[in-house]
Length: 350
Image 1 (cartoon, rainbow, N blue to C red):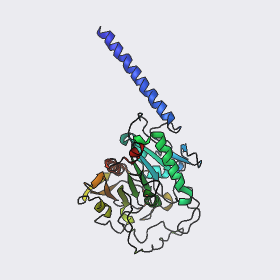
Image 2 (tube, rainbow, N blue to C red; image 1 turned 60 degrees about the vertical axis):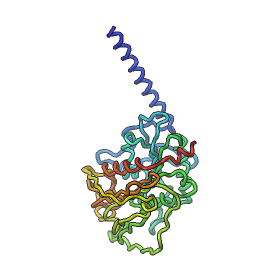
Image 3 (cartoon, rainbow, N blue to C red; image 1 turned 45 degrees about the horizontal axis):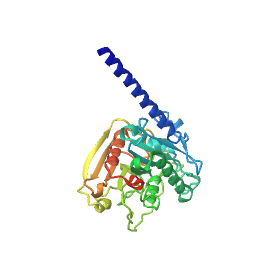
Image 4 (cartoon, one colour; image 1 turned 180 degrees about the vertical axis):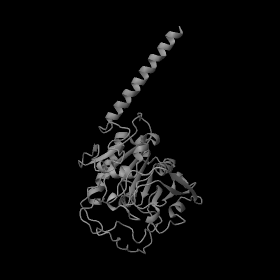
């Protein structure tokens, strides 16, 4: 009798496992035609990033015909809640470099992440150069909106517990331009600015920017004196920056004041492993092009903000503008993102 019972439960376990695997395969095939992979597709390994960062995306946005990367948990179950991150690169960059600069794709299972990482159309000029890939309203706003709609429809607005714009450099500035726009204001729960400007400005250093072709420092930046206009919609805000990019981090935050947060608290994150990428074309400069390396980051949080908002600053010590984020600091930022109030897209589905 004991043998029969053991055999019966063994059979049920095999059937259950088979049905689970079938369900996962079906879901993977159904999400915009992307077969889920862990590690994610076109992932760097063993120093081969240079050969992979230009790889095209795995999803096509039908209106524009442009490709972007979609990463999501391979064990995702129907009806499960996820955090949606629109991961936006900086000027002159491209989607797969951004995936490795802010490598949240590495933690998609642990944090239940859906990550869309697109490339700008890129024929505009910036800083006097021609053909630099940058985000512009004319070429990219409708595209970013279409990606948001495509991903939201694929995973279900009712299953997206929070939606974050995450942008590096000019991508961070683009996120700030978009966050309170008519399309995004009632959808975005949080904005992560990766070296892209803080609400309550942290002034960039005078020599901020890539060195010129002859190796000379970049020209001095003009100093604006106009009072900062704060965004007029509500969202959580995390600012992450390299120590050598800014003159100083302000002691206070007008965004923390808006949400009546408590006094700032400080902690540190120590990484023993480097990030994946850096700007190899400008290697060796203090602000722009330092090699990816282990490091320590100061984390400043403003606790107990109203309405469940999160306000935080992360300063990566001994870092400049283009060293990819290390694993521990990436996960600390994800912890902060996950702790913030969300639900805008879910509310729209009710």
